[in-house]
Each structure stands twice: as C-alpha cells, then as structure tokens.
Length: 201
Image 1 (cartoon, rainbow, N blue to C red):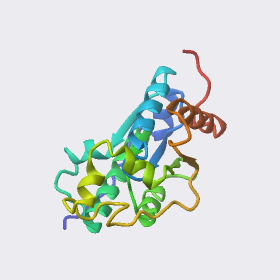
Image 2 (image 1 turned 60 degrees about the vertical axis):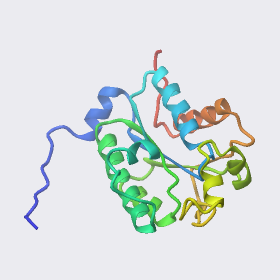
Image 3 (image 1 turned 180 degrees about the horizontal axis):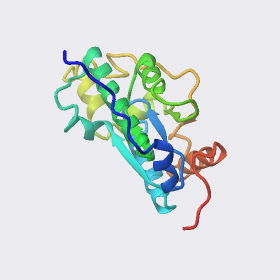
C-alpha cells in the first residue's frame, strides 16, 4: 500500500459553516423499513431549505444505486454500507452542511462507528420507533410480503435483527405523530441545541 499523507486545507469546516450561518451536523434517521425515515428526512430537508439553511439528504435506496451498488445485504455488506455513508456524511459536514441520512442501520456498533466520526453534539440519532406491525402493514415497497414469502433473505425485522438505539437524541413514532409534528420536533431540537439559529426568510 502506498504511503498516504493527509493534506491540510486552508479553509476550516468552521469557516465554511460560518459563511452559511449554520452549525454543521448529521441527523441520522434509523429504523425499520416503512417506519418513516425517508418521509420525515425529506420533509425536514424541505423545511430547512425553506428557512434558508444549506442541507443535503442521503437516502439508503438512492446510495445503493451508485456509491454502494456493489454491496448486498449480508451483515458484512451492511457494515460497509454504513461505513461509507458515514464517511460521505462527514465530508458534507466538513463543507458546512446539515446532513440528513436515512438508513435502516440495524446494528448499534455501526451507528456508534459513525457517531465517533463527529465532534460531540454533531451526531443526532433520530430513532423512528414506529412498531413493526405498523411498518409491515404499510409495506410501501412490498418488501415485507416478499420476505415472509421467502423471496428476500436477511430482511431486517423478519430474518435479521434490528438493534434498538439505547439513547437516541430523538424518538419519533409515525403511527402516532404526523409528518408536520415530527418536523416540528426536529426543528425544535436543532434550535434548542443551537445547531440552527433563527434567520430571515
């Protein structure tokens, strides 16, 4: 392996973020398929954009069409999937952005791995706590039906475990909360932690 040297940039992440009048951070949406990760992340992305903040949304399915198209759904591939997404998320926050990542990310060790990439307070774990029976009843992509029929192996919640976060920064149950209510809670958290500040529209 060739010798590698880290190149120090002239501009810091703090300077890039200051230009955008925001504090960079990663909101990590985790939960079962159908729990509302992508829906809520997308709604928050729109809400923050409308308020003038600079954001970027990374979605599990979209990333697997490009960056991670070579990965399957074995435990090893799931770990590598999350590792790559964590590194990409860090690059975006280094650019001063607020990043929203929506991934099942079923293993606690993987989520901790990503958390450890970020300074304290900049990793916000959002656990979509929607119950399995609700997620399965929605089944927007027909995945649960295929998993029950044996057409999909290693499906989280059916054949493969989901390790519930022990201390997420936020828990949202979309069987009880509307999209607007979830977004309001998320915006309120970001404001309270001063990750976003009030600004002119």
